[in-house]
Image (cartoon, rainbow, N blue to C red; front, top):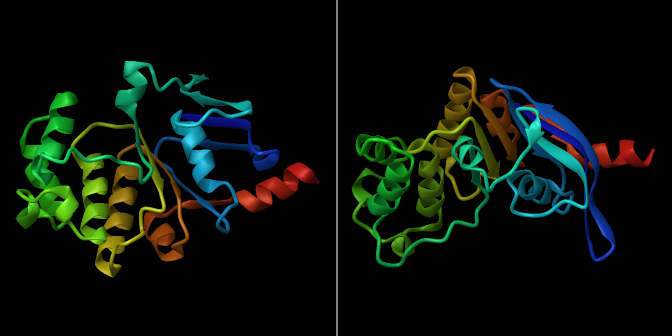
Length: 210
């Protein structure tokens, strides 16, 4: 499904992503691992089309991934901790708009709120949520719309142990349905539950230099 070929990205003359190459198949979870600053988030942003790479290619089903294409936007769901919330819409209304935009029935919003433990918070404004509840709301976006590729940046952040366990099983179930997940993560327990293949971004840089 996804092919990343010799991806490169620099900031201020410093190479953050250096000749990174990997593939992600349907039914697979891949976790980008490495220390802070290793280029995990930058890699995800380049793949999702939120940042422009300096070199290399990102292919989706054999063609250059173009986030401007409506089919690509429907198939690729990127939750990279940069969601902006409308100040006058409730939690449930945010999810309902997203579901409606993708042609989903209203029932998916109720199911998503239940799954993420937000059933009693649907009438709240996102700004009133705790950091952990806000993270669950971000994840709920993936449950109310279709996707074939889900990109996540450290989704375990601000989740309690039960939330991380739920997330691991959810990602594994999605992969078992034939979808694909790419995430940056520091949580090896989450990766193990999700059955993720680990890709050490720092070692990939070392191989490129060597």
